[in-house]
Amino acid sequence: MMAKQRSLFQKYLRVNLAIVLVSFLLIGVVLLIFMTSYWRSEKTALLKKNAEGISVVASQNLIPLGDNSYRIDSRVGTMIDLFAQNIDAQIFLTDGNGTPVLYSQSATTFADSTRTVPLAVVQEAMQSGYVGSTTLGGIFQNSYNVVGVPVTNTLGTEIIGAVFAASDAQYLDQFRVDVLKIFVLAAAVVFAASFIAVGMFSYRMVRPLREMAMAARSFGAGDFSRRVPVTSQDEIGQLALAFNNMASSLSSSEGMRRSFIANVSHELKTPMTTIAGFIDGILDGTIPPDKERHYLKIVSDEVKRLSRLVRTMLDLSRIDSGELKITKQRFDLTDTVVNTLMTFENLIEKRNIQVTGLEESHSVFVDGDPDMLHQVVYNLIENAVKFVNEGGVIELHVTEASNRVNFSIRNTGAGISADEIGLIFDKFYKTDKSRSQDKNGMGLGLYIVRTIIKRHGGDITVKSTEGEFCQFDFWLPKISQVKEQPKLQ
Image (cartoon, rainbow, N blue to C red; front, side, top):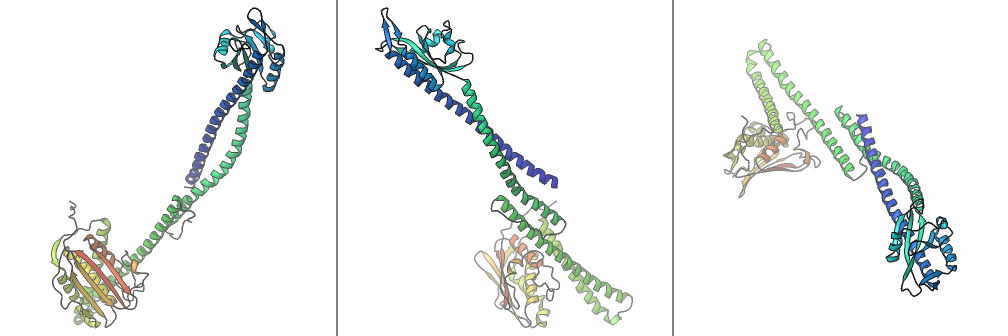
């Protein structure tokens, strides 16, 4: 498991660094392309500007010859050298046939008088201007950036030649190398900083997942006390918060499960011990014959107690598995309440409990499962009788509205504390932790009650004032909203 966690960190780190590296490469390529283009355009503009300057100077310093030809004043050669030195280039002036007339001292190639500029290049320069990267037909040993502009006569009426300005393209290559060196150095520094930042960020991102994994292993070992620190409000923080909530829920469920197991063990052990003891006493003659009926009545009560326990467990199993089926029929809810109340008559009289609210009751019909709703009423009345104070009051009401039936049961007594109100319908939850009053409960009665009522399309609520009273209210639709469910074959 730890290897997987480390590999997750490494994978996340590698992916982020790969993205950073690819981004740098793309930026470098784009930067190099734009810088090269900018350098070339700037260099071309500079060459053209100087070539045009020489063209103007040459036009202004023409000496006409008698045969419709011209000679350029030698002072122009000085100007050409000056311009060439300023822009670190070669400048040369040719006639219409490409024969060099004047050239800068840097243009040593033209010392060989046999070299001429290709006619096509000269004609293009004389017509519309020339821009290109070329060796000029072998004049240069490597490629040069060349700009050519026309030269006109003094009056500007005739094009008599061209001026060319050329710079070695190797300068561009050197410029690219320099730019690349600067970029690589800067990228290395930024990449190192990015490596540290991404590493720390990746570790922080993965750390909560590691802690969750460690906490999950603790949960697997039965320890639900571990929690994951919530250090942010983003998705990871929300996941950590949800994980902690899940842990709290599991811890609560585990506590209730253990309490439930303890309760069930106790509830099974006590009646079974009683039953076995009394039956053995009857069989071996320890209990005299005249006392057998009395002890058999106790055995019968304990068997019924076991039966209720098993029925509750079966109901819980059916609820959890989704197999709780409702068989609808129309019946009198008031009659169910009265008949259920009669089963507690002896206990009510014994504790001197006053029952009110049913003096003027009338039949109230509802669509639902009679057996399940009888269990709901039974559990609520049993709770009221169990927790009402000695000589207290139990108040019951069955009323109807236009589209629903309401049932209310209220008992005086200790009530329920405010911090327990929201928990009493939870599975396995018991308000009487000491078992002083709720000796037979397992914390399932109200959970089953709420489940049955909701399956009928109704709802149940509770309100209580500690030390005064507790009241449960539920409502059911007159016409059942429960859909028929297909039975398993």
